[in-house]
Structure formats: structure tokens, C-alpha cells
Length: 429
Image 1 (cartoon, rainbow, N blue to C red):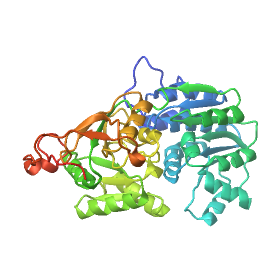
Image 2: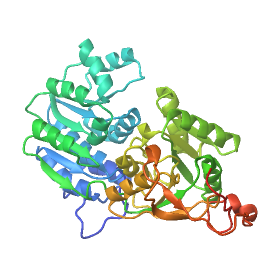
Image 3: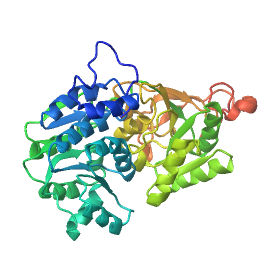
Image 4: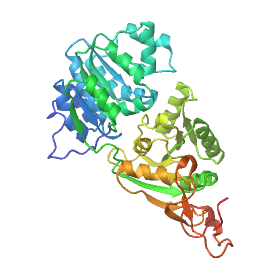
């Protein structure tokens, strides 16, 4: 939802796209003057009431691409808008971005997410919010208790649709769609376009216009990416080494909740101010961690994939994939947390010597090779898959290049650093 502050004279501004004057002043106050590519292509047909599918990466301005047309259409009538998205963090992020525009129209918004009080949400419903921003599970809770009706929904947004289906929300989404009028406008946004999204669009949308500002699965263009081959037990030392080299804000992704907690504890013990976001944290704890990270109270935020699309913080210098994701598409969403708002970013992934196939799957998705280097604690390895040997769950192995001598080389104090040179030359155990 971030935009470059300096408009190009050749590119139309928001006024030329048909955005209402009352919204233009808010955009100007926020120094948002130039529409992003997804906004430029999506806003005009969305204002016309057309169904559309927007394929774009995170950080490209999708929230305003669907939010401004929705608000503009609802301000001319009395019906409702519904925005469905996968995570609590993303729900609050979207509501926070659209709230100033909604207030200008006199439109109330309400956020329905798990972990928040059902009683307070029922009170919000009595105030007749015109836009509901919700995660699928909590909205289904309200539907089951008959505390909400969706009969007046005129504009439906499915944001991060691929992520919702990956997280197993299809039954809940189907139930929600059964409560929404068939005669409606549907705006679907996704970073990828798998077959289940195609099926959803075919069943639920009316002649949707497809807008793709980057090929599905394309990694953020301004993010420099690298993989470091490292032993599992060396990851903690490597991470702290990186945190000394990069002085800005860092987002670290762990594959598990337990791992995220352990990484956070170790970093704080090492005097790196770190906070954690994962499913074992309460809603208030997760919001406090994210707000603390945004304000700079914490330099490091450790998260599981539940937060890979719900963190919108401009200026994250580095994303570290402490563990490679189970799903290659999550790699794209993770690294999309840096390199936002036309800024450059960096993403460094840790891979163990048994994860050759995982790296190859990511490279296939992003349509290009990843720069690789080897942690100094490892012996030299051939950077291609071995013809023998199992890889366990990681799939594939890297072959060790044995030297004639087994004596350790002198690596000095840098022997444990991630940079090449020096290091130890010992066999894998």
C-alpha cells in the first residue's frame, strides 16, 4: 500500500483514475501522489463495478487498489463491503490504512478476528458498520451464532486468496460466500495463481478482468537474495553475526512456533532487542510486538509464516529465513517484507547441506538462480545435487569435497563467520 512520493509527469495521478476529490486530499497529506502499477490498472475497472483478479506481490499497493473503489462505491449508497483475509495482523493493517478514507465518508469499519472479544464485536455490529474486515474463522463464528448478516454486501474482497486456501480456509470461505448475494462485485487479490484460485474465480466471479503486474511467483524486484549453506547447529551464531553487520531492522522467519520462541530468547540474551509473533502468542501480544517493531523498540522481529503477509513495515533492511519454508511460495511472501515502497532490501536464507531440492524448488518458482555461499564452518561442498544418498525430508544433498589433508585450516577469529575464507575443513558427522 506504499507509493513512491514523487509522481512521474507521464503517469496519470489518482485524479485521472477517477478517485474522488475527498480521497485525493488524504493521499496528498500522506505524500502518496503516484499510483503504483496495480493501483493504476485496478482502480478504474473496480470503480466501474467490474469483477477483477489482481495478481501482485506484497508491498505493491493492493490495499488502496481495492479499498478506494470499495469506499467510493459504498459512499454513494447504503450497502456493505466485506474484506476477507488470512491473518489477524493483515486485518488490522488493512483497517488502519483505510480508516481515514472511511471517516471522510462517514462509513464505520469493524474488524472481526480470532483472539478478540466476541462480546465487543457484537457491540460493534450494533453500530451498523458498513465495512467488515474479517478472518474466515471468526466471521464463521458470527454466522453460526447469527450475530451478523451478509445479505447487504455489495462489494466483496478476497485478499491474499492463495494464502487463505493454503491455510485450509476453503470450507469457511465457501460458507461465507453462501451468505453473500450472488449479485455483487468481487475483487480477488493474490500473489500467485494456482489452480484452486482459478476454480474459485470461475465459480464465484462474473467475467472477471485479470490484472497481473508481475508474473505469479515473482520475487520482489528490489530485493537482493542470497542463500548461505550452514549446519543447523551453526544458525544461531550466524544470525547474531549478521545482526552485527546489518544495523537496521531485521525480520527473522522460523518454521515453527517453538523455534521462533527459542530464537527470540537467544537474541535477547545476546542483547539484541527482539520480539516474537506466532500462533502461541495472544492477539494483544502479537499486536504489541508488531507495534514495538514499527516504533523501533525492537530491532528484530521473529515470526512464523502466520505473519509473512501481515507485516507492513517500511524500512526493513534485512529478512532472514532462519528456516526455509515448507512451501516455496511462502519464500516469495516472506522476502516481500523488505524492498517495499521503492526501497532496496536484502534477503538471506539459511539452508542446511541436505536442502538442495528445497533451494531448487524456490529457484523454479522465482524463475532464476539464487546466489549461494557457504558458511565457513563447513568443508567445501559441490553446489549440485549428489547422485547418491538420501536427503531425508530436505530432499537431495550437497557433496562434500574432501581435501588431501584433514588438519583444520587456520580460520582465526573469523572461522565462525559466514563470509568465505578461513574456516574449518572437517568431515560432516
